[in-house]
Amino acid sequence: MLTISHYLILSFILFSIGVAGVLLRRNIIIVLMSLELIFNSVNISLAAFSYYLQSLNGTIFVVFNITVAAAEVAIGLAILVSVYRTRKTVNVEDLDEMRY
Amino acid sequence: MEQLFFYIFALVAIVSAVLVVSVRNAVHSAFYLIICLLQVAAIFILLRSPFLAAVQVFIYVGAVMVLFLFAVMVLDIGREKTKDYIHSQWLPAVGVIIALLLVLGYLVKGGKLSAELGIYNEAVLAKNTEVIGKALFTQYIFPFEVVSLLLLVALVGAIVLVMKDKTRPRKNNGVGS
Image 1: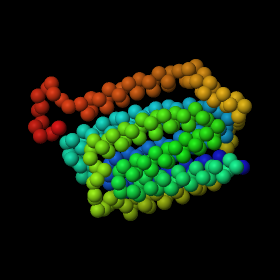
Image 2: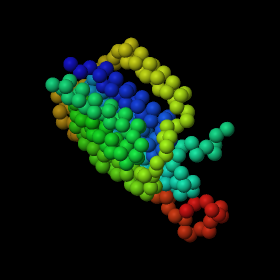
Image 3: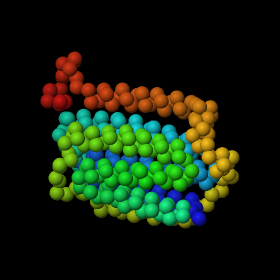
């Protein structure tokens, strides 16, 4: 019998892997892909709550979440392209102008 | 049976997620991410929402990943060979990740569902798309409109950000393409 804990544990493992990708990788495009992983883990957890509470709010929220993720990717990759045009780098550690 | 499929999907999803963050080539990373997103779509089907699975496949696998691969192609970073691809702040980062796992494990172990059940049981959810569509166009019509405006703004913003500026003379010389 599958309980909500199964889905939540899967979601949290994926979330942690996504956070690891954001914090550990230097290639900015892989950082964006890890952000997508985080979005997906949150979607799993919302859908699981929606199913086990027999409510529709979580499902609707996942639909909105996917839409916002699509918008975020479009803007993020556009920013990435313009950063690459000006700096010729995709290394996160080279983009440190706003560091203290 | 359902449990077996859940474990298969979960295992493949976790393995491909680990490969996304550990593989060096950005194109390989994108393909592993596609595998992971397909497993998440399968998990949505296990959660009795085939509509979400279809949306996941259409938007994530169809649109977002194509955008990622296109960006990798445009930026020409697929064959970037950096020796050290791990960020230099890896030690505090690993600490943060382990702390996060501990907190999340504690919360999952100690939490329990206390909210009361709604009306959308499995029999109602058999007509999944119809139920979601009705809710989306009646109860949630305002957030629906807001999100459509957001998509329009994102579309215009993405075009403006990558557009080459030909009409205006450039003031900051050397910056920009």
